[in-house]
Amino acid sequence: MFFPATWWLIFALRASNFRTYLASVVGILVVILYAGIVWLIWPLSDVVRCVIEAWTTVFPRDFVITAWASSPTSMRIVWVVSAVAACAGIVCVIGFGSKFTQANVRIQSRSMIAALAFFIAVVSTVFPPTQGMSLFPIVWLTAMYMASLYIITYGFPRFSLRMRSKGSNLRRLSRKADSQNPFKRKRTTYGSPRRSFSRSSRGRSRYSS
Image 1 (cartoon, rainbow, N blue to C red):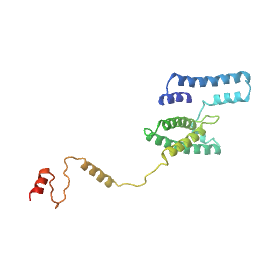
Image 2: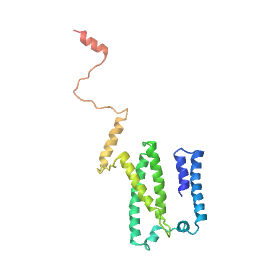
Image 3: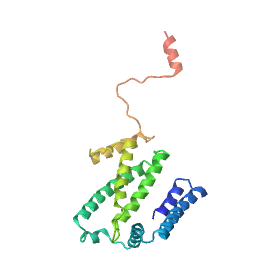
Image 4: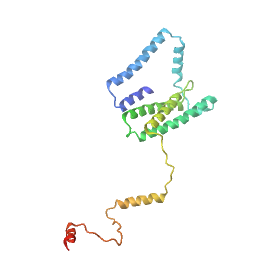
């Protein structure tokens, strides 16, 4: 699941060239090479059996609501904490998305990588394997990382609790429309004399005496 996501990030970060794709493929081949060496030298070791068991049980998955009834209390607490972390992570993703064009390249890259790992881990937590453990620790880590990155970059979020009435909004819009209307006459102050600013009138008033 992370391998195509890594290729998408390479393309989204505008770093797509032959060297970057080859580096990701070489990383997979190195893991396969060492796994083959361990399989040939220690075929009955605990590490090999653990890897085989994890590989065979990762595909059959169940919905988290269905597994709630048969899960112990400790696992239910884990799922509740994961739900809270998922909500906080979604709020952070929305915050980064609203300010994505204003951020620099470093913040954009870190937020994209953390958001992608966060959503993949959320999918694994919502559909956990029937045997084994889901990726809920990554949900916690990515949520805390995005929250810390947002606070360090933009500070604590501010929420306005003041409620504006509908009439005040209508008056504000009407004043804005009147100020932008070129055909609407401006109000004049009655009783104030009209002054002339022409050069000829100023000359005549100065030298008329």
